[in-house]
Length: 116
Length: 115
Image (spheres, one colour):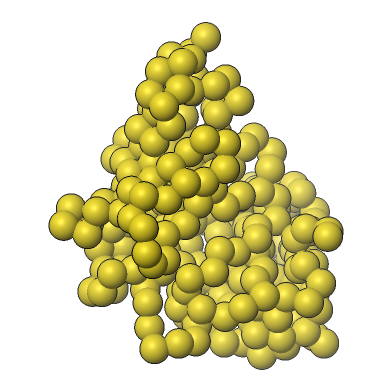
């Protein structure tokens, strides 16, 4: 069974500082990996995803994440935090398979606070 | 294109009452998913429709929950009778393709409070 662990339910950074949100996964085979973001009063929005190929994935709003198989990690980073980045971030994993439907499993979420 | 639409956005009901949540997926998306987030916990899978058929309903908590997708368009999720532990945010998502490598498009969710 696959699972996702997000370290830190709340993370605070100063505006302009590095954002690092941690995600570790457990899966029997290298999975598909996702980061979603939820801004206040909005739905979940796909930030970026890793399926295959280059392990450093770039997403929207300057975010990127690196798939590290040896560490079973998929941490999300952004060099310089903006006030508008304040939101809740969810890491998610989906097993690869021989095709067809594969369920997506979410982590518990990390709320990012950006301090002026 | 219009996104995934859910309504109501909020619902407060008393224990024992019935509530029906609705989700309109993106037009042309055969796959429709329901997820739920109980406060502070992870977003948990409830079920998956492919068109009007239930592909996977392994996440449905119990038989008080009934999901339908007549005609393969919009979906409803009925909770009858509602219990306190049913409170949470119910998300609907849709995708055009089946398969784990495709991200979903989520709706804004319905916040259900059972008092």
